[in-house]
Image (cartoon, rainbow, N blue to C red):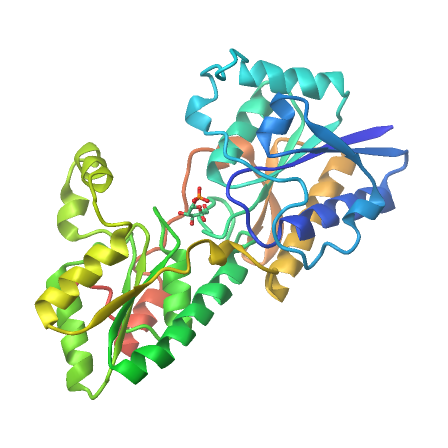
Length: 359
Ligand code: F6P
């Protein structure tokens, strides 16, 4: 008997079901022995509290194009892993207990950075774990791409497209806030795809003088409206120079709902223009996966399943230079993949006239 466990952890994304379908179909098709599939509910919480469902082939049929996760998800912060739950439960011991009690041969964990740190810990504790790179943010270290990313770019781009028409009608400046607290992959890609005039991302701290200069220039060039795309974590040069603690305090003390509103107020004050804010928010994680995500998610699922059937564990499935590879969990854990401010896309965007607010 081959017993596998599945869980989806952290913020959801569009291609989680497609990934699990890839794992389970491959296991069923290729295993030389009968298979039992345990689906843990709501991420690591299911593993901690023994909340699971027995699943079979039929549960994974018809879900390739379905967004969300059939298992449910939740966040179990890594930094609190060794802090007992409110009811006194030791999370790591409870997860090991569930894994051993069910006699699992392998746990497949679909998750982002924090979740992968936990997967690494479980692997160090002796469990057979394979991680799969989920996140719309595309910030997982060790892989060129993550599933969820391209679908999120599409949603964000459609939002920018839609705002274009109304911004044009009214001759307004729009600040569109796109997901990404620490990294700016989605704002960068959607900003270029949607034809933004200004893109503000955490990796390239901005100066409001430069943002205003870019908006003024667009007006001089005959543009009736302007589109500023900012990441949730867009940061000024001044803020970037602050000690981390001080910056965190400043963010916590913000009275505005999010960063875009402060940027919009400042632009309105300095330019005298009519400025509006649009925040697509969690729509960027919702709806169906796009075709590219379905393909990559399927590849990840299949590769993870084949790895399990070989009896190899302790890594994350990744795509590096177009090849599907296995990256040891210990190498991935605790690292983020940032946008390189010197990357081709940033250079090309600048050449096109897009301002990043830094100069
Ligand atoms: O990590 C995915 C993500 O969507 C980020 O882009 C965003 O900053 C965050 O999650 C939002 O988290 P929550 O779903 O907890 O509001």
